[in-house]
Length: 192
Image (tube, rainbow, N blue to C red; front, top):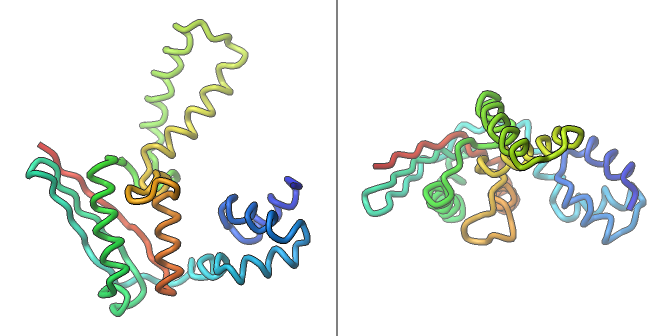
């Protein structure tokens, strides 16, 4: 599998690595066949929706034994979809997920740089105490930084009802099913 082809297709489509790898496994490394396969699978349709406006949606909540409460704001394009069973079920599942997994940010690109810097300082001190050599310290920290951003971000966490996919994968599946752009805008968690 050619890394150059994967990089080129990711740059062209903005699709996740897994979608591109799946296409290459199915049709080989011919770019035209890959693009056709991605269109047929609907992956590119979701990417085409990225520029659409989301002016409708819903606020979903979950309260666990009166001790943890979550509110999630999820937006879509039309009122019709916001009232659909699939959208409402997804919203309720996301609220449940937030209560269970306690993410701190919606997506990895929204993670607070100060949060990352603080966590990396702690990790660096721990690695030095473990006796890790200075020359590999930066590589280890870079890997930890990426992993941390994924762990504390809602969209990159394993989905509570199917841990084989991420929350983002589930969002894309619902978006594909409804034919609309769907965005998790924000969430709030309250706990005693």
